[in-house]
Image 1 (cartoon, rainbow, N blue to C red):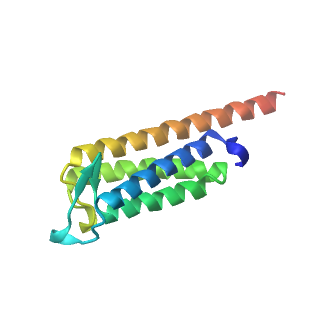
Image 2 (cartoon, rainbow, N blue to C red):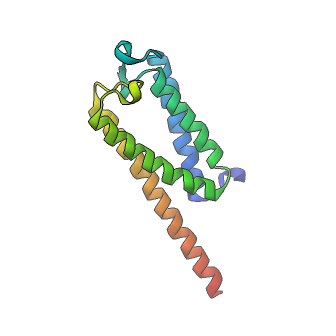
Length: 142
């Protein structure tokens, strides 16, 4: 993706990666707690943070940056990101301590943010598919 001229999905993967990285670093600074179980804590900055949540965001940023290297990888990342964020939102609605690691006492903000990120990923995924289909049609009709 030289010069930022990659496919829409690649650019979206980079922007989502930046978003996850920035929020993950902020979350880690706000609450670097890696305890588990009943000792687990959470501090809110937009969403609930602890060390586990921050590291998962930073890890997701790394995956987004790698995925941005190729258009197909970026598409797969966007689809997986949408599925993962929806699943996490639903899980957070059911359990305020998923896996005993992520503690969401203020679950509403977490759920809204994760659904919003899933929505951005899905919209970008389908927009890229539409662009690819249109480009293929132009190529075959030329």
